[in-house]
Amino acid sequence: MLAAALSLVFLADPVIRRDIPYLGAGRNEKADLYLPAKGDGPPRPGVVIIHGGGWTGGDKGAKREINIGTTLANAGYVGMSINYRLQLKDGPPAWPGNLHDCKVAVRFLRANAKELNIDPARVGVIGGSAGGHLAALVGLTGDDKSLDPASPHPEVSTRVSCVVDMYGPMADDKKRLERLVPIVGATFADKPDAFRAFCPLNHIDPKDPPVLILHGTADTTVEVADSERFAEALKRGGVNHQLVIIPGAPHTFDLQPRQRDLRPLVLEFLGKHLKPAG
Image (cartoon, rainbow, N blue to C red; front, side, top):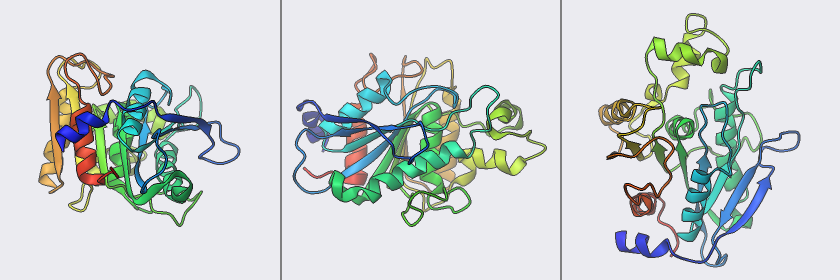
């Protein structure tokens, strides 16, 4: 399978459809679709790509997201890189709307499966930094009605088959959670349940999908300990997972950091759990 993953990386440029209004009318946030150059054949898996930026910035068209989307499309997947609700200065709390937007993206792929030639039973999610945190939440909360968006497509499942978390922050202590007050819209003392819901570690269940965690030792933004803590929690919870630490890799790396080409690893993981059409 590893050899197959390596061979899939070097195909024709993907087809990119930009600025898809996946959230419906009235929303400024859009998505870019990365489609395999060869559009026919059996239905393909779909993967939602969630950008980073501390929940306050970032963009679907950043270098990392382009790299991921291109890698996925060249390997036979449909990649969907999304913009989502951000925490703006003096704006309303972004939580849980930011997670809702990510879950709507999962629904969008399923609701448009026929048009996009996607197998709705094979959908995954990947994200970096804050996007890794949200990707983990998408995977671990599944169809939890308390965190599912009311619309659009409320009849469509938000559950995914696997998660790739790239150095996502996993704050689980009160001091670190207090820094999130603007995003949650309250203090920990006022809304402890909201803060607990924001932390992926509080949603782990043996039925959760497999998780691949990637982190670099030179990351000075999110400590490697966050990913180690996440992996240990997944282990205790009986969740299939893999933690890969890349020596010397900094924060914000894509699938081709200078230290190691991660494309074969990620494609092998996705191939195992999404079984792409060949």
